[in-house]
Structures are given as structure tokens and as C-alpha cells.
Length: 68
Image 1 (tube, one colour):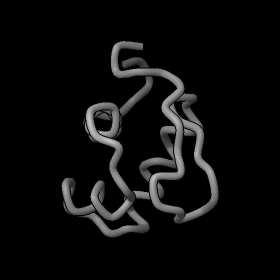
Image 2 (image 1 turned 60 degrees about the vertical axis):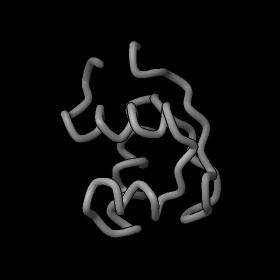
Image 3 (image 1 turned 180 degrees about the horizontal axis):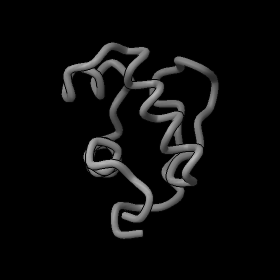
């Protein structure tokens, strides 16, 4: 996955397999709800996901998959 950090790639892989909430993402990777949001925001800036309302549960759409 071009342009992604290792952690961003791990998060993208995780959400591609499981429709996780921000809280679930944070628990899985050991960071806060806000930390999960900022990782998702980075994925959005790189064109991998589209976020909905801020801090909304499962409010994202995967645009590019793990293999992109």
C-alpha cells in the first residue's frame, strides 16, 4: 500500500475485515478513541477511506482496499 505507514496499513487491513467502530480500532491497536479518529483521518487524506460525521460510530466508507 503506497504512501501508508505500517500502522495505517494495519488499521486499513483491520477495518477491511471487520466493520469496526473507532473505539474498537483504538482497543485493537492500543490508542484512544481520538487516536483512532486521527489514524482514520490520515487514511482519508490519502484516499483510502471517506469519513462521515466526526466521531460517529462506523461512519466511514472504504474507497481503496488493502491491495491498492
